[in-house]
Structure formats: structure tokens, C-alpha cells
Image: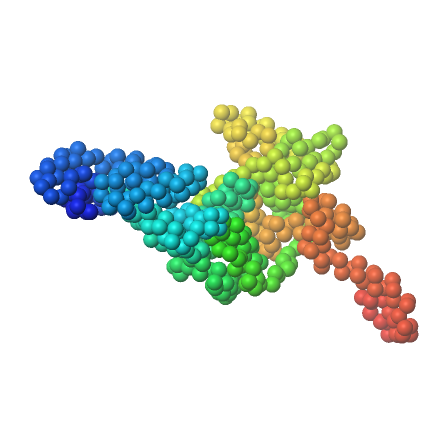
Length: 507
């Protein structure tokens, strides 16, 4: 049986029941007896004993799972017997004419009600209804009393109205809480791959830094330096400028949404200095190094991945996503049209399959050269042989994929990265990233006279500026050619010589 006692309030007896829930947290519920204090103590005690015997705490959360506007009606009904008549009349008028209609339209459960929703109501009253300060304070008094009753019932742990100033647009919501709310909001609006990147950045990097500092959204708006301090701390910790820039993009988008909601008036991320982007200089293999790599990976599980990345410049997701229906043996072509991506979300590895590529330009058709065609025919024969040997044990979930292991399981994107590193180390080859094979492909193409426009189409870049920005170092030879072409016009003709050429002893 739950514990309980009587309390006098506004001339009436109230029953206060207390108990511990399943988590060990002590909760309480206030119930009006409807009995005036004078001459009714024994009747109130008897009613308290009966209520304690019949009360079931397990039903309390079910009762609390109602819309806030519905709870307001319950509060008015229960408060009718305990509140002074004038105070009750004012509260009933405010609730029925203003507060309840707003929250009926902007439905929110009592259990989910936060300072943010309440501030939205007061912002609406100030902005659209031009409510006077006296009215705003009265609305706040009614809401605060209703929510105080919810706390007494044990339906809420705290009263969110106590953190709201009805007359000032002041967001007391913690910055970290809003970051996580925004992350949850965008989950259904962006690609899963994009969301996983956002989630990793926010949950593992941004929130841990700001969590202990307890900055509110208003603090962040007033002091953009707090964001700047975060960037500086990350740079000092060894995080690359490009990574900090990506985190800035997340923070900026989140705060932009806070401005749209009216929680803050300006985006403080607009007033901080981003670090200067550092151009990524890939470590690449030259022709001789690639020849050695091809020799080393011969008949290794990484062989197909190396050829597709180094010769055709495929991305990791495109390598793993290559299917048999993409191969046209008659026309001697294959088409990049399906991708498989692996990433971490909430601590778990997830694999995302898409019947489309990174961008529209990434969908491309490439020639099926004879050595690669022979390798494909060899892999096809091996898969059929393994299916026969393994029988029912052979995995048949990925029969349409080219890159599978002997048991028919699809090669994971992470395997390419990890196994490639092991192969290089075991064979004392120069250390590069798997993605750098794609850069090596571009370098070889350019060295053999292929233009940047053609490289763009081969690699599947959506814009030639992407190609030129990544491979600006490839364009130096064309600059030398331009310099030598205009050299005859140089005023000092006796001293001219080709750029990049050594003078002969006679000169």
C-alpha cells in the first residue's frame, strides 16, 4: 500500500500519496478530497485510507500520457474545489480562450512539454496577438499552477514553466539538448549516409565538448566566442582544419534552424572565423609502383578492388556495389549504377545499398578492357564452382554481386580499406590510402595526355572544378607548355630558353 497524508490548502483537505516507482524514484500524487477542513478531519482520514488501499501506481504514467490541452481541462476541473473563486475564474478564462486553443492546435503531450514549447506560446502571444505584459504574466501564472499540479500528481519530474520568462524572448534550452533535437528532426529529411555523418560528428565531437559547459542557446547567441573556443581547442588537439570546417557546417545548420523557430534572433556561427581549408595532397603511386602492386595482389582477395580503383578510378562504394547486370560482355562495357556504403550509427555498423550513385555524373559507363574481362570471367567461374561445392551452406543473398568471398558473402567496404593496408605492410610497399588509388588513376591519365574534362568524366565528378581542385598539381606541365609558347615574345630574346630546360654550356 502506498503512503499518504492530508494537507490543508485553501480551506480544503488534500490527499498527498507517495510511492517509489520501478526505477526507485520517489513519486507523489495530490488528490483533492472536496471536504472543507472545518469538521471533516475524520471523514478525510477515512477517505485517505480508502484511497491508499485502492490506488494503483502502475496507472500513473498512463494517465500522464495525454495532450497538454487535455490536462489543462483536468486541472481546471480539479482546481475548482480548491482555488479561490476569483483566481479560478481568471485562470479558467485564460485557459479556455487563449492557452488551451493554442496547445490544441500545436499538439504536445504533457510528458513531452518543455520550456521550448512554452516559449513558443508566449512568442506567439507577443508577436501575433500583441499581448500586454499583464496578460502574459497572467497566462504564465495559470500555466505554472497547472504544471505544478502535474508535478504534485507525479506526472512530471519538474515544472518547465519555471524556466520561462513570458515577457522576454529568452531560450533557456541547453545548446547540447537542441543539437540532439535537431539531429533527431533531420533524420527523416536527409540521406541515411548524410545522417550517419552528422550523428557521428555531433554525438562524438560537438556534444562532448559543450555538454559540461552547460551553455544555453541564448549563451551561444550572445557569445559566439564559445564556438570559436571550441574550434581552437580542436585544432590544438590535432584535429585537421578541414574536419573543423565540417563541424562548423553542422553547427551552422543547427543554429539556422534555431533562428527559424525563433529561439534565437541571429546565427552566432555567422560571426566566428572558420579555419582555412587545407588542400588534400594525395600520396599516389606512379606507373612502376602500380605495376609492383598489381603483381603483389595477383590472386589475392583484394585484387579486384585494386584494379577497379587504380585502373578505373572507382570509389570504394562503387567497387563493392558492382553487380553482374552492370556488365555488358557483348558491347565490352560496364556501368556504375549501384553503390554499397558502410558506416557507424549509434555504435553499430550499418550497410546502405542504393540503386544510384553519389551524384548523377557518377553514373557512368566505362570500357571493358580485355584483362579486366578475363578477371571477371575467372571470378564468375569461381563463384559457380563455390556454389556447387558449398551447397546449402553457400550464401545466396548476394548472387547478383560480383565482389563476394568463397562462401558467397559480399565483401564489405571496410574490408577493402583494412586488407589493402595489410597487403602494403606485408610486402614493404609505400603506404597510401585505398582511396589514393583513385588519385593515382587520375595522375596516370593526365600523364598520358588525357584532359581534365575527360578525367572528370572517367572519375564521375559532377563538376570539372572538383577535378581541377583535387588535381591542380597535374596541370603544371600544361603551364610550362603555355610559358614556352609565349616565350618568343619575351623582350630579352638573347637570354631566352625553354622553361624546364637546362642551358647548354655554349649558351
